[in-house]
Length: 284
Image (cartoon, rainbow, N blue to C red; front, top):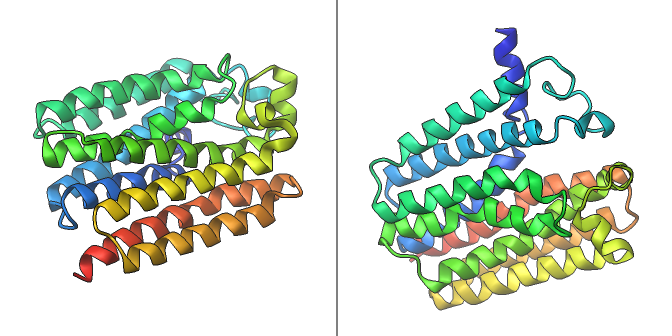
């Protein structure tokens, strides 16, 4: 039982914010692709698959960062870093979760399966991007948003341009919220020589976050408008914009706890966007 509790912490099931940040864009894609009437089986597959793949990604991330995390205040007590579990255990957990996720999509079409392979490779390679890529948060946005093209592929057996635009919006959103997250660890990351957007943007970090929020909402506005979404959708966008303004008040002084609170609050920004899409279709 104690071992299971350690694995539970390894894959961050005690901190579901990461799952939600993946889930909201995926749900938006499923709603748009199915004109507001997604198949319940697809919803179940993608919801469980999102949770499994995010959890697998956490295990891979901790394996890749096992020698780094012991030097970072926020991560020093993680199960792998603290030596409570072995490196090979983290890999086995990640492999088991990835396999379970793949089994989930076996009933889906070939294009969705092909995209799932790309999603797996991107998620597995992300932890290593922070070694050399100036803004690894952009790559994270691809990893966290790959449920978007997969959702369209599962429903329509094709990936339209709108799906790639939504993925671009997700990249900007990930840069915004993960820069807030990186601002918490900036001092430690500088000492370790890691690459993060918070370090790359420097004194323009807050401005960059707000510009990324603006880009996210602008792209989603255009895509939603093309799908014929209006009243409730616009209300959801205003709600999300309100969340972004609130985040500015939390991060403008660059206080560690304020930045972390802003990161966590992005769950509500994503929820606002999804609610706007779902309610707009429901009201028809």
